[in-house]
Image (cartoon, rainbow, N blue to C red; front, side, top):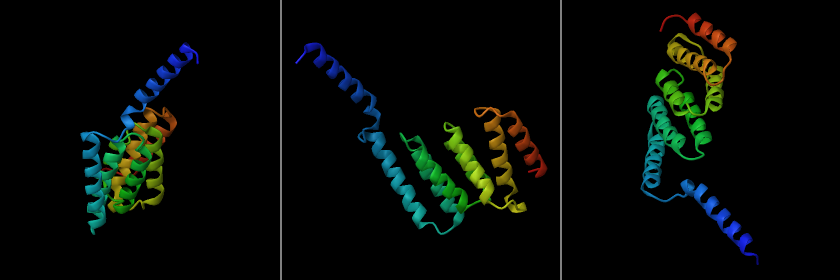
Amino acid sequence: MSTPLLAAAAAFLLVVLWRVRPAVPFGPRRRQSREALREARARIEASADPRARAVALCDAADIMAKAIGGASNATGLYLRALRADPRSAEVVQRAVAGLAARPRALEGLLWRHLAQAPWTPDSRDATRAVLDALRVLHEGPLKNGIRARALANARDALGAP
C-alpha cells in the first residue's frame, strides 16, 4: 500500500473524528442535560394544569434547543407548549428566545400558532407577542419589509396591550 495514501486516509479519519467530537454523548454537561430533560419530561407527565404543563414543555424545549441537532425536537415541544396554553405570552416569548438561532423554524412555529389559536380578547397578549415576533423576524433575518409592515399593522389593530 502507498505511504501517501495511508497518510491521507489517516488524516481524513482524524479530521472526521474531530468534527463529530461534540456529538459524543459523554461528559458531565451531557449527563446534566439528560438528567434535566428527564426531570422536565416527568413534570410534563405529572402536570394537570395546562399552564404548568406549558412551562414544563418550555423547559424541555429549552434543553433540546441547546443540544446538537435538537432544534426540530425543540420546535415540536414549543408547539405543544403553545397548544397547552395558547393564551400565554410568556410561552411565546420563551419559544422566540429558544429558536432565535433558527428563524425559519421559528417563523413556521409562529404561523402555526396564529392559525390554531383563537384570536379572542383573553388571548390578545399572546397574539400580539406572536405578531410582534413575526414582525421582528421579517425586519431582521428574513428581510421582508412588506410582511413586516403588514404584521405591525395587524398587531396595532389588536389594540393596546
